[in-house]
Length: 410
Image 1 (spheres, rainbow, N blue to C red):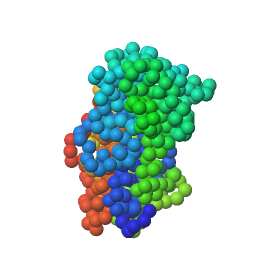
Image 2 (image 1 turned 90 degrees about the horizontal axis):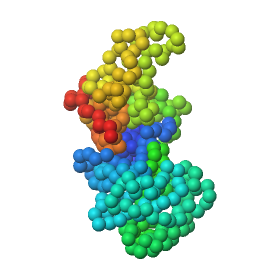
Image 3 (image 1 turned 90 degrees about the vertical axis):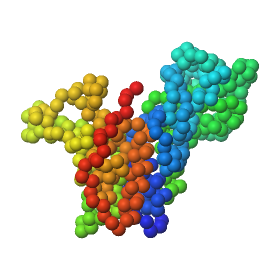
Image 4 (image 1 turned 60 degrees about the horizontal axis):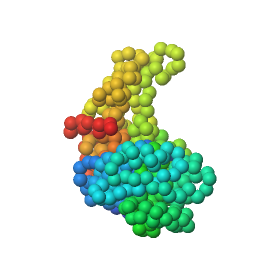
């Protein structure tokens, strides 16, 4: 990092943390991202939820992270064609191809890929096409991520392009685009380069969580943070406390060190990402009566935050054994606590002066990729402005706006 701007520490390197770090750095702050391990963003399959028109800052952050925002149509490996608000760069956009165009679905022996079945499920506009895309015997069984990594090599991509051109020639001009299994690069999306080599649009279908799309996000994030001058520290954050003798500063404690900052953004994820944990009273002691009742969720980082939902802190259960787990989870609860629980903050993510939350750690926020990015961008801008100001703003007492309903499940 360089420059004389305020120092900001972002806890978490997922989509929300990356968005917060990028916009804060562009606003002149000296930013450090502290990330302990892969989170929920690594499980991303490449689809972007539809939402309101994103701001210029959100669009710029998305582009840096290898994401194309805008209406598109993608197809899943199961053959479901769905409209989305954006896509990872390797996904094939069917929207300009759905009328009077035929998409060739490549048939090959890959795990969880059946080109013929996909065509039958997807319906009109799709046709199976035979093409040799496996070069080695083990490619029938290796994971999608390893198969995709082989196409990072220019020689392998050129080999694939030649085979796909031969397949198109056998189709006598009846195919106008090609849909492939998740395979087009790991270090970066290679769909655009492959399309140029083949002469027709080429791209992937979405795969399973933990496939190439999420790993490409990690690579794109690392490149974007490096280009923005953001420092990255690997390590689990254990606590965030006000600095001794200086209420305008925060101390971020890691397992093997500490960071001092003018502002901190907590973007450690929710229950999947590791920022929250389920800890009912009965988990205190095995096979014994708990000594006290306690809320069933807690933040995994020791910080001055309030965990809540529906705009208010969590209640302490009236029973020593907490509440029935099935009462807080989907599908047995129409408005599941697990979908809402998080850190209480205002609309900018502000918890206390110069302490912010973003992404799935925020209470009542929709658990979607685009909303996480938007949340991170808002928190990053607000934290950079407040940290650069000499005026300390009064702490946020409670969220002033009504609780926001989480996105409905598909």
